[in-house]
Length: 417
Image 1 (cartoon, rainbow, N blue to C red):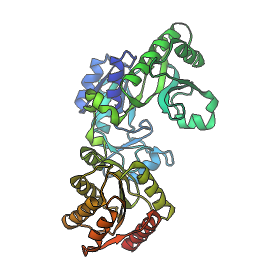
Image 2 (cartoon, helix red, strand yellow):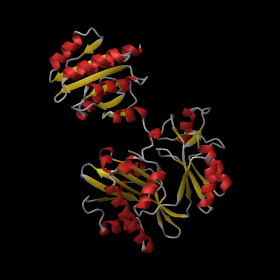
Image 3 (cartoon, rainbow, N blue to C red):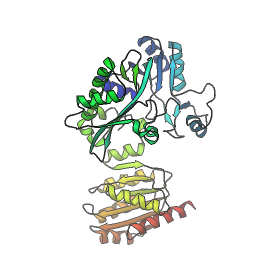
């Protein structure tokens, strides 16, 4: 689960992490008032979308070719004069109003959003600062160490992936015991590695400990501050922040679950979540309905291996009922890019005859405009296959996963042809 920058900063501020003052607005007029409320001077106007690269991104209307906008945002083409960025510096209420107007209601295209871009419905008006240094701070889960790891580097304002690739020795790493949190000596060691001294180092230690404490207590799966700035007065502030939370832990955080901006989420993924289905949209044209995450990944791999492209990850789980399977088909077939569907079920808890009945019900209820390939193995598989074979529907059955992958790839290609 992702949140906007302004939401992340509100959460961090409540947790004792130093952030610049800011006001989120939805109209240009509100932006001018927010500028005055923040005391004037240098102020930053920032588009609020779930994407990085906003400073280099372009805010465009429907008249602008999105492929060209992406090329500009990626630095492949020069930026035309007057084309609005997703982050703008202003020095007056009038400039704040103009900057907000250039973003709100537009689509922000960045290297992360792709040509489709994301709609700008809110902007953050935040206090600007005289920056002495830009650093990077992040917390992510290290699967090998089986614990969170604090990552920090003096290379702030730069993509951490680029730093890791080109100068990995510049990244400091501190594993965190989830029971103890970040220890004082670890915080001091990070501050020393970042070159913080004196009163600034003391502020840095407080910042680090509160930041990591919040990450652990909120079940954040990723927390990134880029840049973490040191001001000319020696203060340490989170100038920008990205927070992702573990969906599976949201039952513990009802307050965080309420921060979801559904306009920023994939509609199919939201719909699937409401039905208890694990679904992720992908770019291919072969839809997959599978029970079990491991089997779903293997199915996608084999589709790819045999020359196809999976359109989604969909795990209906071991105990899905008929209604869930029907909803899964509705979600899969709602995408115009799908040219074939592969159902791959290994019946353990899941009974293959129930899947077969749901398949037949879906076939009658939903417009199966594309080929359907089915592989059933396990509990009641023979009964399930018999139901499909006697149905008279145009369903392609498969024996084994390789056979299923080969058949669905071939069916998708025939459908396109």
